[in-house]
Image 1 (cartoon, rainbow, N blue to C red):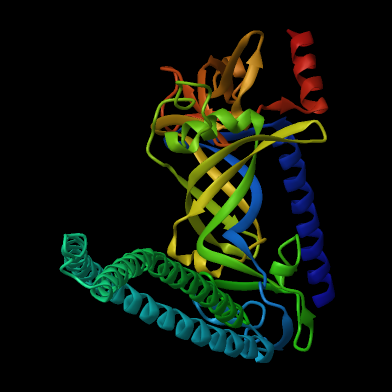
Image 2 (image 1 turned 180 degrees about the vertical axis):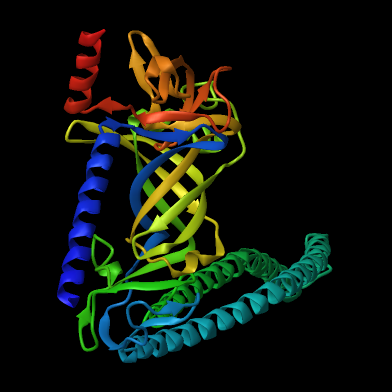
Length: 464
């Protein structure tokens, strides 16, 4: 009995199921299509461009000094402050060179000081010797005048009649005169020599100059030696991150002063004080991206011209990095580079975006990123999905869903409404028409009839 009841129930369910399916098929003979609402809201035109994260700059670290690498305290990826040690070279040779240069400086300084003393002494002695020689000459001239007078007087007495002076006295007066003349000439020569000793003063001054030049050269050599010693400590020129190390402890490197190329790059330091995204913007989107950039970021167009487009405040750019898919970063356009990048027939331009959001610190040089430029924005506009747009002849519009009526045989109808379109964001597009209102249903997929429905409609038409 139970089995019979179960069988009846199952049979009933099967019958009901077939009835329901049949009814569904009949109702579904008409494919009702798909609709979307006309919305009022904001729409933004977005331009996307891929690129890479870049540090402010990559600094090449080279060594001016030569020597063996004895210390590498920072590993790749380490953050360093300006002045921190990056590479230490063995300083022994350079230290000995500093000591030699210091001894040379001491010798040159001593020579210079002695030359100064000699010059000062000669400069002080010269006027005194000239004055003494002048006094001796004047004294000799006075003695010569007296000797000349005595000789003349004695000559007159000797030549008188009778002679009043003896021959011996005459000879003595003449000898006195000649001796006075000789003393005058000697004093004159001494004065001339004392005057000419000014040359010795000048030579002493030249010796001071030469000694000072030698000291300056020795000091410069010492400074160079101290600089080379200091260069055995290679320090960070700026705050940054050790990007790549190209040497190791124990390696002997050649300094840049000994090579034409300036030496081997031992390390790259990334200056992360600023972080950028360099995005490649398609030429079709270049003008709209340039319009949202400040005037200072745009290329100049010629002499006397400023930039392309009117000036505008810097608009924010949204950046997403592949390494942080759930994080958004914000930046501003700093530079639109004029050099084109033709690739496979497609031309793009580099746009340099300065990242400004505080969370940029986690980004690394070389990461792949996507930049999103909000090139246009409209608020409070009517918008529909892009799929709702249809073209009828030379008009673009939407199919508005209308209420059911006898003309549509009890099914919802559709009316083509021409529209003016505005910006789109890739999903929605701005539409302008007084015929449309918020909440209206428009078809994104228009209704169609099944073959069975078409046959029934054809049969109905034939009966009529």
